[in-house]
Every structure is written in structure tokens, then in C-alpha cells.
Image (cartoon, rainbow, N blue to C red; front, side):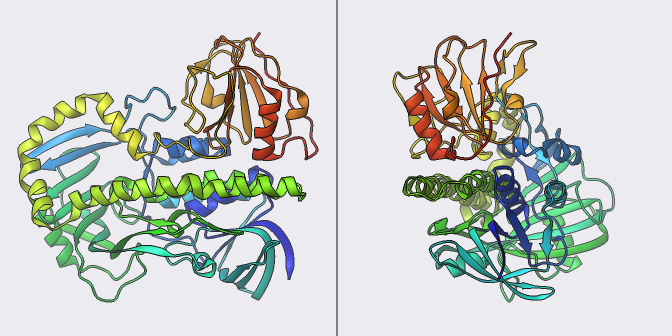
Length: 534
């Protein structure tokens, strides 16, 4: 039996790496294991949403990610004989620092996150597989298969980020409901004779499905992604690249899409079987599921990596705070409420995403008569209207809000508390805190930049009384907003959602909420006073 840790993270994809970072930065001792000896190749995810960048910002990795990303992506939509240019940058999203979709390879995301963990002294243990795990009531006992032989460890919590075939989920006995799709995805990196008309990514709508070409190939110029009816037969795990696709079939896919280009070089290819599934629950005792271990979608709207990262950010701070909570009866009850809130908040959001991705995938990939007609005939006839729609920036931005989870709220969560007197004009408890320009002394600054560090943040209005020091703690920062008149208070969770709101600084109400969230006042540490405006 090896030395105990607080959180064992199983799986070192974007979800697992983010969970390890978030838990570590909120006080947990973390260990992260990955059964693959090397980082997974090729990238499956290529798009990062605005909300994902927001929740990663306090972990100090956003700048490095943006250096690897195309933050002003362009796309050409080929609808019949008409080509329509679209820009995915500078969307009408004034309440975020990232008003764009970002094209970035999953491998680059993993490299940045793994380096951030290494900088904190946490190494990804590759070639180490979870064999079995169980909750014994006081913690979890995990059996690992390592390059040096079997190992048994104890930990407080296990974060299962180990994909659709999750060992964590199987050991927890959590149901896995859904079914396979009758369509599959084809992936390939290839060089083409000539460049497809238009700039940036290319999308071709055809009767048999969609075909994308992204200038993000890892071993060639273009990454091809196409949908088609599944060929069936033996294959890999769902969502995992499997057998290669013959060059002739890839050339046929290009021809069906109306693309007059020849494959000059094929670096690699794979067929990927797909499914839509949802875990019956995201928590059983000390065992938690996140990312593809908790929900599996089609690639439509680019939810996989983004949803997993946002799961991890929601869960990580809760595990970190729960690990440092005192073990008396009050601390135990509050910890259960805190930990249960993960399933209560993220599973309903996952259900809504499942409906969204299933509907979008039906439209873009189903070979039924209605979606085939919509892609091949209706889309071509509606092509002249597309530029008009794209010029309506607010309409496009609203679509991005929904896709990227900027609209997700946790209003029904037990962590969302409204005290009297009500504070009007501020986001409701459970809502995402929008970005804004604020005054805190000196030049105006952006609110999200001021909150871009781990922990809980208390936003005091201009005339609010300072919160008593005894309700603060080492993970709580108070900030006075000089350009917000009033005596109220908003408390912001580490994942950027409002947790507490009141029209005055109610010491008892605030203390109760903070005790539920992070047991403030229990761990040692010097509270930080409010940063008052000059």
C-alpha cells in the first residue's frame, strides 16, 4: 500500500489533465495516471469554445493555448455550386474575453496542460493502468498496473476520466445508457493536388453527409473529417480511431462532396465508430466520472473536449475543498452537499448537450431521406440567404453561446443561494458571471482578468460594508467594485458561476455559504482584505 493522496485522476486527456490542475490549485494532493505509454495521436478534437477558455484562465494556461490556436478562423461553406465565406472571429460577444471559436489540436491542448502540471510538480504517470477500484466508506482503494508491477494505493477520491470504456465507471457499477450510431466518422491527414476554393476550413454538404477539410493536419496539410453510413464489422472502442480507410474510398468521399482534387499523399486514415450515451449518474460515493467516461456524443458542434474540460473545472475545486474539510459531523454533511452538487449540476447540462448533438448530427450525417434532401437540395437553394444570416452577428453569437455553454446555469443547485434583501441588476445565483469593465482604483479593468486565479471571489459594491475577517479564509479574495453603486455582495465560485447574492453584506448568510463551499475559517491562513478603489 503506497502513500495516500487526496485525488487519483485516471486518464490524461484534456479532461483528466484539467481535473488534476483544478484539484491541485484548490489544495488537493493529486496523482494522475494514464494507461497509454505515449500521448495519444492523432488529435480528435480541433475546436475550443469561448467558455472553455474562460474556465481554464484561472489555471494560468490560456495564453499558452492561444499561442497554439487560430483565433481568427475562417471557413468556406460549399452548398451546391455556391461557396460562402464565413468568419468565426470577433463575434458579438461583449461579455467574454474570447469572442471567437479557436481552432487548436487536442495534442497541443494536452501538451500545454501537462506542462502546467509538471510546473506544479505533478507528473503524468504513463503506462500505468487502473485495474480495479472500490469505495470502502472512508476513501477509495485502487489497484494499479504500473511498469514496475502491481501497486495498491489509498485516496480520498477518484476522478474517472478514462473514456467511453471507463474502468472507473464499471467498478462503480454505474449504468451506461444509449446506443451506437448507424453513421461513422472518417479521419485522415492528406495532401491534395491544388487547394480547395476559399480560405481556411472547408465544409462540403452532400446527400451522403458532410465533409470537412481543416488546415490542421499533423502529418500532412489537411485534416479530413467526413461522415458516412457505418461499414460495420469489428472495430475499436467507440470514439477511438480504428482500421485505416483505403485511399480509393477517401478519393470517392472527395468526389461525392463535389471536390475536384486528387490525393497526392495519404499520411494516415481511420474509421471511427460513434455512439451517444450518458452515465446514469456522475458520482457513486468516492468515485466520480467526467468527460467521455460520463457522456459520449457525436462530434457535431464540437462538444467532446469542451464538455470534458468544463466537467473537470466544476469537479476539481469541489474535490480540492472537500479534501481539506474537517472530518467532524458538520464538515461531513457539508462535504456531501458540495460533492453531490457535481452530479446535480453537470448531468442536466450533459442531457441538454446530448439532445443538441444528436439533433445536429442527424442533420449533418443521417442518410435518411429528409436530412439527405436538406443537405443536398434545400441547403443549395438557401445558399443565397447564408451571407445575410451571417451578417446578423448577434444571431450567430447567440448560436455560439448555446454551443459553448455560455448559457449553462446552476440555479437549482444547493450551492446557489439568494439572501434578502435581494440584489437586483446582478447575475442570479447559479448563472455564469459575465465579463465587464469595472473600476477598482486606477484605470478601468476587465472583471474576468481580475478574477483569473483560483479560489472564491467576493465582489463588493461601492458602499458595501467590508465582510468580517472571520468569514474569510485562504481561498477567498474580496474585491470592491467602485463603479457599482450599492451595498450588495456577489460571491463567485472558482468555476466562474455566481454562488451567493445579497443586497447587503449579511455576515451570517455569507458565512453559512462559505462554510458549505470551502469550510472557510477552518484551515490556517491569513484572510486577504478587500482591494478598495482609490
